[in-house]
Image (cartoon, rainbow, N blue to C red; front, top):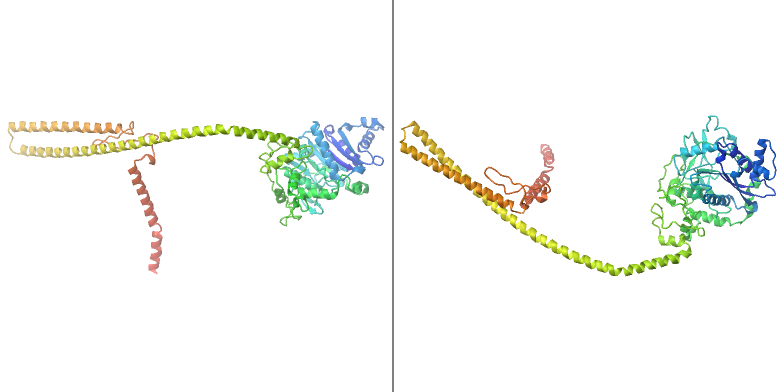
Amino acid sequence: VNIATYRDPLCPKTLYNLFTKAKVPEKLFVRVLQQRDPEVDVDCLEEYCVMMAKDRGEDPTGDELIESCPYSSQVFIHEIHAKEAAGPTWARGLLSKDIEAAHQTGDLKPQDHCMSLDSHMDVEPEWDDKMVKMWEDAVNEYAVLSTYVQDIEHLGEDGNGKKHREVPHLCMVKFTSQVRTHATKCAKDLSKPKLTNAVWGAGLSFSKCHAELKVMVDPYTPHVFDGEEFNRAARFWTYGYDIYTPNHVYVLHDYHRSQSNPIMHTWYQNGKKHGNINDSNKRLKTMLDMPGGFGDTEPEKAIEMKRSKFGLGDRRSLDQLIQFSGIDLRNEKVTIDGKNRCGNIQWVPFKEHPLGVNYIPNFDNVTENPKDLPYESTSIWFTADIKKDDDGGLPKENLSEKHAELQDALEGEVIAESDLSKMHAELEEELKEEELVKNNIDVKHENLELENEEIDGEADDAEVMLKHKADERKEADDGRTEKADDGEEADNGEVKKSDDGEKAGDDASINRGRKDKESTEDVEVKQGAVEKLKAGPLRGAAFLKGKEYVANHPLVGPGEHGFNHLPMFVKCNVSLLVFGVIFVIMKTSGTGRAFKINSKKRNT
């Protein structure tokens, strides 16, 4: 828990409430940035210990008071004299540095829960456990619960099973010297935390501690009151965090006693301590692109400030924030479209850093410029000018070393140039050899095509010869039929002489011998044509065989199917046929409808 207090007599009571009402006070650690006048104001820790001693019926004094005080070792006091105070933003900036130091020593981890609040608060019983569970209900590792909490007069309304029907909901701003969170709406009967349009309140902020470590409060804004909250809200949101309205009231504010104590606001009297308000306002305006910032006169300086340790994040852009929040920052208007964003709104996605949510970006301790350069690909500044960023992010003593490394690399490239020329010449020789091989392949292909044409011609001649032989056999069969008819006539008439029968038998033998000879010649012709086809370019393929012919087109193999493997004359005929069909379809399309229309005209 982080508390910034200025001369607040209610700070001890706040500590007392936090520890005595926590479910697990042993796990509670509190850091207090205490700004007071020791001669006049009470000490927050000592007075807390007095309260705890009274509960036990004791009255210790001196060192014994602190040593015997429950949980006193879990309270860390950062003491500042009230005369050094420079406003709440400046004080919370010192607290952020204390949180960073605790992380560096291992006393605080990114996955711990962190809560920031004012120094005049009260809480419901078991508030610690309830706040953690409510945060988990948001189901968002980047959730930040924040609002202007209700007054302590509502204390106890969330106990005994009775729930608040209404909770304060931040969603509006107004413009003064800065952009200021303005009033609240009421959200009713929420079942879980409600996403807001990136409006944040400093009175209550609950999140995982990696949010506090990444989005530290800007310590260079002394004397700022207006503008603190929305500036940090913008930084939270551009780092990927989302602001939610709590759906229960577990932390409450003592508005009456805190606001009625005039001494609590006397830090204004310190004037220009640690800087002046005009410089602070200009810095905040620069971060948000508001009129009056460095963006108007020194754009490069504005970019450097936005990318510094206390600048904007690189997960979402400022343009996205303006559209999401509906607040016209560049023209200082409370809305960009005449509408507020107090109802249900759409969450804006972003690319998480490759090293995960617990990764805390690195910045130079002196210049506070980024050290993680060049920007990795998920950053919205990935396409930025790398050289300029390097100059801004690297310590000056490293630039000379970097220059020397680049010079050595350049000399190495010059030395390697001769090797590149040699490799180029070798590649040219290889290309020439490949060209010769290609030419030889083309010549062989032409020769194979000529051989294929010769084989096709021979196959055609064989087919003609087979047709001629078939015609001769047909004529012979017709002759035998006529002789058979003559024999039947002889059976019906006179009986032939025996020598005539012998002559007929001799003629039949001659005819059978001629037929056998013709069959033998046909087979030889067929086999010769087949052998010639097999010897061609497509040798090894299967060939069709008919009863009276030999096909002169071989069957293709499994990998040779398709239009591209057809003979050229077949391709031409198929192409002409396809184009002809398309032409006829196009020519005749719509004629039926035209005929009907013309028919109607003729009928009328």
